[in-house]
Length: 218
Length: 218
DNA sequence: GCGCGAACCGGATAGCTTTCCGTTACCGGG
DNA sequence: CCCGGTAACGGAAAGCTATCCGGTTCGCGC
Image (spheres, helix red, strand yellow):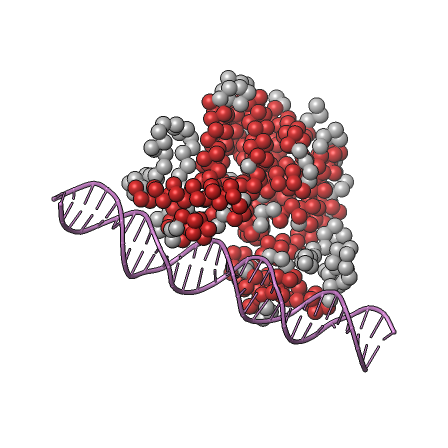
């Protein structure tokens, strides 16, 4: 069956010569072959080019295959579908964001009280989603459920879970974390900002209201 | 251009011989022609049959066309895409739910304090989503953004907005309403219940935690 | 009844997705 | 250096989506 492995270095946050971070087959195989890794890179480049030139809507597996000169099957072998390709592209741009909230300065990073960090994180998330809205929307449109199996989501969820646990140890933090992330789905953000004429600041304000429940002691 | 009009009688909640409720072109046209209305009905019937027999995944425009003996173009003329067809099917099953929270007995219906109603509504929503998960997931997969332009969502959003306004008049109730509905997206519910092994009761409990912020006076 | 324009029907078409499998290219061990 | 097993490549094929447009049908107004 041979499930494709999009590969996005996430939690490790390694920043070496990048020689690593791409190309293992989970725990169950050996390293990705050199030509395969090369194709993966060429595919991502082509995909980024297409997105930059014609927008995320023009990103099709066919177009990528044509752009790289490969066969369609090859593209599908590396990335199972358009959604995975888009998530891989997003993952690359996500690294800076992850560093910010995992190791950066307060209020986003460590050295700040949990509740404040949580608030800062959600505000930053609001900015990030509106900033990358087109690509995120395309990714969600291609496969809504893929969101939850992406490395980026896992990282954010873990982060929020930890913070919620600190603030309200008695709650079901993992579940609450999902619910706090849900309002930032690309489709809703799109609806609010593009159709509904809402601003990011309004969204942040409403987020604060939502946080009151977690914030309040009793 | 002639945008298709899925037609789901929503707010009116009319329950007459059902002779009405299907078939106008918004405010800008005249009634749907008899043969067209007839085709709409036949399409919905065929769609319902396909879903019942082979699951929502098997619902394609092609399949419906074949099942009804119509051309594909006709199906597309009535319902712009699979998502609209699915939403139309869902709308039919939604009526009972709408009656429950709009005119039914407490705690869901009127005659209950707003906060209690809000809580009851979200709990009922959790049940409803898990109950119809397959179809809702299919609809979301077909077009994630369609959710927000569906009549069912509009109704729910209005309802929640009203309740939130009663509880916290100074807040941006409309925005908060969106955020309170977001955790019940089919894709998240699917992730939680099917992949995450969560139960509806756990989800309800977490919902209560989320509501604390709205609930609390200060 | 009747005529006419709008609305509708249906199938052909183009492009995309995803699978499948024969062929080809890598690469670790001998 | 060569060899064999394995992974990867590539393109054909099947099915779906969505659009388009010539021919047909409805139903309003007379």
